[in-house]
Structure formats: structure tokens, C-alpha cells
Image 1 (cartoon, helix red, strand yellow):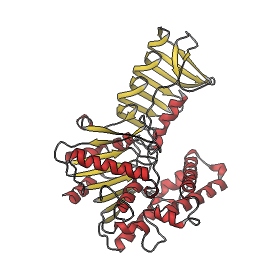
Image 2 (image 1 turned 180 degrees about the horizontal axis):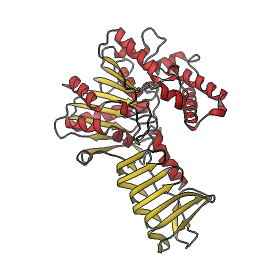
Image 3 (image 1 turned 30 degrees about the vertical axis):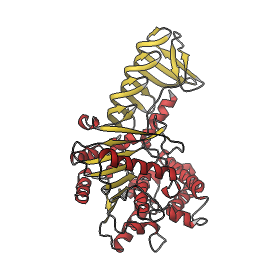
Length: 447
């Protein structure tokens, strides 16, 4: 079950953690009962329960070993060699997962308890925490467009086609809030993280749409993502009779980039969009790609000088920096010094441009950027200074908009408010948005 451990661990970085059973059956070493193995070579299992038609079946304890080392233990019900029914997984060094399993995937009420103190408790759908209250969950619709995701716009789910969720209010739709995931984040995680906000929107007849796109490139160079977003917005307008002029786009990190950039593009003569958003919300998004590149480059050099003292958290930061460098080299061909215009085109704001780069298209748009500027947390956990935090460029962008006449551009510091869905502290999180206040702000814009 090593694969399952790795997939579940991805929830810590906001990824999808659904798990689909696949693989070949192997015999347990004690009785010869067949058990599904999806982890390749070097895996052995023991099973304490009964066999039925040669498969592990009924109540018992199933234990996995990877190359002789304990990898995982399952206590519960099995059918045909797969966990099915009430059960509990234990993963050494990680924690436990307990609930009802259907074909190896958690469904319904369940919980995950991590050894680092994190907890996920609530409703699971296809292995993903999808934790709305029952009243709202019954109104949540998953809309599959039937279009294959040929360019891997969304990774981590069980679907190979593009889709979106819609929480549909009972009354007439007054407006639409769109939520874009961060890089690698499962769309179900977006919904669970924004539970209070989405339910308040529902109560106030605001339709909420969560779009399954977590690996798209910059929209200026990604026609497939642009087409997907335009298709979703067009369908939402037609299917739910939503007002086309009352869309508010929002997202965390990459999602915030999408929200801001789509809004800018909608006001540029270079592109065609299906809507012209009323407002945009960025939840701790990077906005200046050139500065993001330079920051990643500086951090890599710094970490390399201090390689002996790299903690797991700092290693994760280093991995992020290397990912960014590779991403920008692949997308733009090189550094900002080599391809300055490409970085300007791909940025929501350019600090070194007198007109703010693409930010000039937001001068008449209500814009909010939320951040948790906890410098002490960043220094301790990432060895980062203000120079390498998103908040530096974010504040510069909002300052540019305000100085150029946008009285509805807001920079909202939410110091100490950042917590991940599992309860662990992290400034780069959806929780920095105050659901009550944000809903009131949206209602004033819409009404």
C-alpha cells in the first residue's frame, strides 16, 4: 500500500487524494488468499480473516510489507481481496484513515488523523473530502463536459474529462462566484476549504462554481484552458439562468492568477472571452512572473549554500523553486532577461513597467488580494524574507491600482489566519478569506 500512502500524503500540499483500485492480485503469505496489489514488485501481505473463492473476504487484518518493511495495516471488512465496508488503515509515520470503503475507496462519513496533529473529518466522496452540510451537499452538482483533458489541465482526479461543480441556490441566481484551485489542488478540496463561504453564497442566492483546473499554464499562452473556462461560463449562464455581468472570479495561488488574468484578458482587445467579470479576488497569488522567477533562482542558490541544514520544510520550498524554474524555462524559453515581453504578457502585474503591465486593465474593476504576511512563519519554515513572499508584489500591485484611481482595489492582510484543511498552520491557504465579510462585499457589488 505504499502508493496509497503517497497519494494520501499529497493532501498536505492541497493535492487531490482520491484512490482508485488497480493492479494485480497476489497471495497472502499465511493462507494463500488473493489480495489486490497495486504497488509493483517487493510487496508481500498477510491476512488473518477467511477466504472465499480464493479471495480475502470478511473481517480480518491485512498487513502490507514493502521489501520486508511494514508499509500499512488495514483492519476491517474485505470483499474479493479489496477493502469494502467499515475499516481502518494505519500508516507508520503518517497516521490513520477510518470510515466506510467501497471498492477500496472511502465513501461517506470518515476521518483521517495525521501524526503531525492534522485531522480531516467529514463526508468523503470517491476518496475525496467533500464536506458540505447535508442540505447543501444535496444541491451540489457535478457537471462533466464530456471533453477529454488532452493537455492535462487537471491532474489528480478520477476523471479524464473536464468538469466543474456547481452549488445551485434554490431561488433566482443573483450572481456567480467562481473558485479556481491552486497548483495540484483537488477541486473537492477547494469546496471543503470554502465550505462556509459557499454555504453563505447559497443562502444569499449566489451560485458557486468550482472549476477542475489545477495545472494550466498562463492563459495568454494556453488556448485549451481559455476554451474550457469560456465553455464553463457559457454553460453556467444558460443552464442556471445566471446573469452574465455578475461573475466574480476567485482563486488561491495559481487559481488567483487565473482569476486576475482572465479578468484582465476580458478587457483586452487581444482576446475573446465569454464573460466580462464584475470583480476579481486573488488569495495569495503570485502576480509578477519575472520577480517570481528571480526569487526562485535566489532561493535555490541560498539553499545550495546551506545544504547541510535543509529541513524537510525547506526541502519542500526548494522543490517548489526548482519546479518554478523548470516551468518558466519550459513555458517562456528562458529567464526574464532573455524573454522580458513573455514575462510581462504572462504576469498580472509588472513592477518594472510604468503602466503596471496587464494590471492597467483592472483600473475600473473591484479587486481584492488577500494575504497572510506572517514573516516569522516564513523565516522559520521556509527561510524566506519579505523579498521572496507574494505579499511584496501583491501590495505593489494594489498600490499601483489605487494610485491610478481605482478606489475599489483592496489589499487585505490576514495575519495569522492561514490554516490548511487538516488544521495545520500555513499562510498560503484559503482560510485567510473571511467568509462573512467577503459575502457582504460580494452582495454589495451584485445588488
